[in-house]
Length: 279
Image (cartoon, rainbow, N blue to C red; front, top):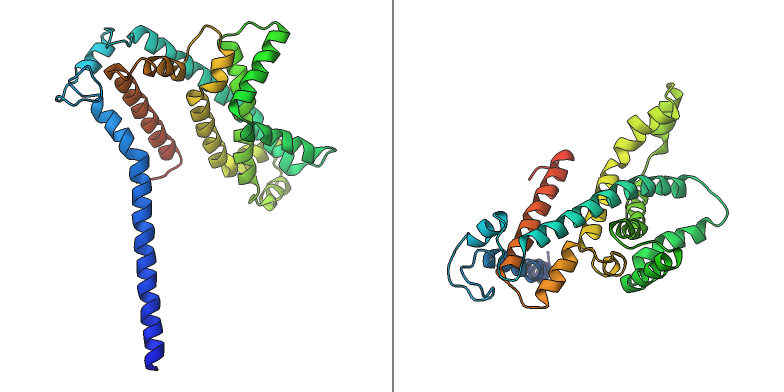
């Protein structure tokens, strides 16, 4: 090996190590930027101060007050629990309907040819790209013109309208790598259409369905803009938070947000356990 080749190889290794180190530092900074505020929020929920951003010591008083029904600053626990209940109800119904319809739609788009299919696919993608405020206003106009009273029901309809697209896109991506010969083999062995779907198709696309359901739940639970236009006099947790934060951040807001984070993390762990994912 010549001396020049040795230097080139040494320089290449140094550049590779530098690139790996740079990417590692970059990834660390991105994660810190995303998650440090979350950890600060959780820490401040245990802050022994009615001024949420000034640390004065550790306490669980705010959690005790919340679960005992006492007001925490400007946060009324009864209103917070009602808002949480509405958000969960809307998200659960939305996910159940969206998963069924979205999975059926994905199967139809993947397996069948029909006139206007490309245009229909474009319509499916529209809720993913149009601004939420446009969708909220259009739904508001539709409900007003139809004479439909706004409330939890209209919020569910509005959430289903955009959640179906998310489920469809995720399940459709799963179907792109689907081996159709497995279905054909099942039918050759005497399985009916339903049995083939139950024992062959569904287990293969189940991760995509679960991923679509989790994303749909998160999008519905977290939605503010569309819900704000179509829920009428009712309230959900994002709307409740918005009204509270406009008056200043209080310990009650941090406590409720921390509880939601804990529930979300538990749901993720449960989903991973169902899928057989271990840490």
